[in-house]
Length: 198
Image (cartoon, rainbow, N blue to C red):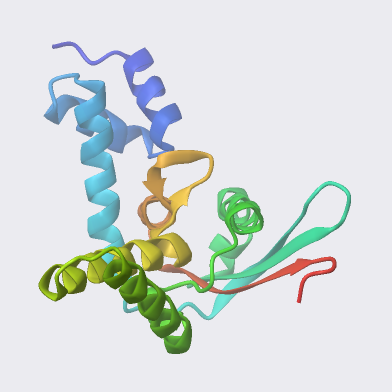
């Protein structure tokens, strides 16, 4: 199949990948746009995995203030070079994730950072709910494990579904950005402020 410049442009608009990467992905998938998108996302994952151990000592602080000024988020993004820290796509990613945090209110960046006492409290509630419903103890444990996994996925920033595109998690977006920028990028921390809320 003939790969046209329009096809390459369409794929580039969808993925923000480089022109040659888009052309190569379309060639490998015989012009199938959806398969080409998947292929580029897989390559982004591979690049992210290769770069995961590298230090992210440069970066930026991005903010989002919700209309009316009653809700605001600050987020620290890390990268390897100041060149990437000054990149518009990198900064826009930071603003988008700050807006996501304002909307969804995660507890921590990674599942390991979620306080153990919060997880234990949730588990206790789920156990009581399951026992009160009359379920046998063997089933209770499986139910509780499933509910805890769901709770963690909903409260851990990297595992949350991105508000602007629920087909992707925040981790998926981060992997795509790592693939595009070609260096390790991390969400180091965030703070969410809301008037009248402690």
